[in-house]
Image (cartoon, rainbow, N blue to C red):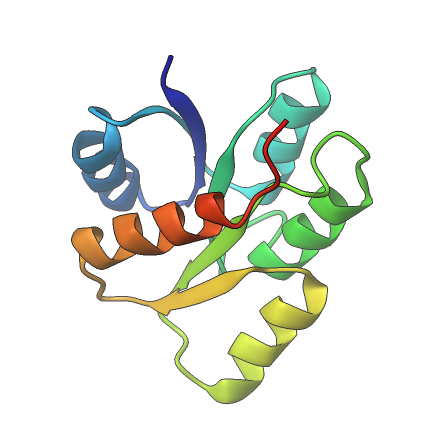
Length: 126
């Protein structure tokens, strides 16, 4: 059974690229902002990993991550932030809100995949 990957990004091109690249290994679900992603998660859906953009309308990446970390079912799900912001302060903000990793756009899908694999390896087995 494939692992479930939630991609939260307001750019349709990023959603398409990640869905195409990861669909062989993951069941990929996409949402355009943090609020829609939370709504989907709170409807009882479980995921193995999340890739979230930093800058999105309605609810940005750090606010989304903070809400994910408060939810008992999802608090341990690995979260990687994908962002066009390369300032250290942006990275620190995401990490403080509970992100596990941060990758700057433009990015290599291969590197993103390896980072996801590394995060999943560190997860406790249930």
